[in-house]
Image 1 (cartoon, rainbow, N blue to C red):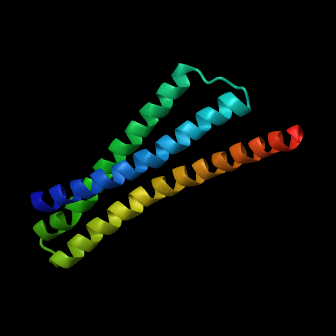
Image 2: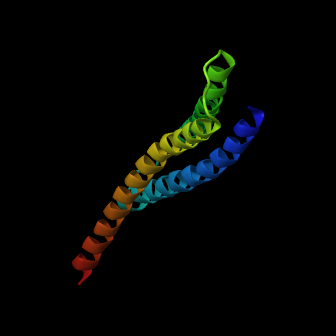
Image 3: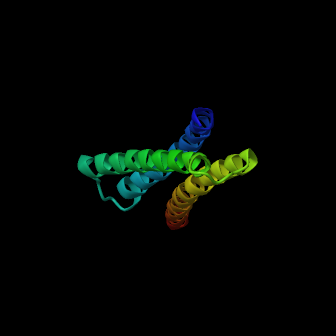
Length: 129
């Protein structure tokens, strides 16, 4: 069981990096949109809360994925047989499913903010012409 958890922690690490990248993209686009376009300055407390929320989500997802990875082994320990292939498939699907939701949501939000920024800049260009 420790081997599969360690292997899954590597996968979780890669997925966490992807999640961090899209979260940071969303965060930076939001910051730019709020300051440069809407002229609404965020305070430091809101930024800190966003970082804390992101860290909490990552920690929760890691713990959830470890639990799901260990669950098939637990089933085997109590007397039900689970083929090793199923254990691997369940672990990989859990990691993909759990992280994919967050990655998708932050990517969708970042794309909406990018779209708003581009529309605003295009409108400014049209006003200048």
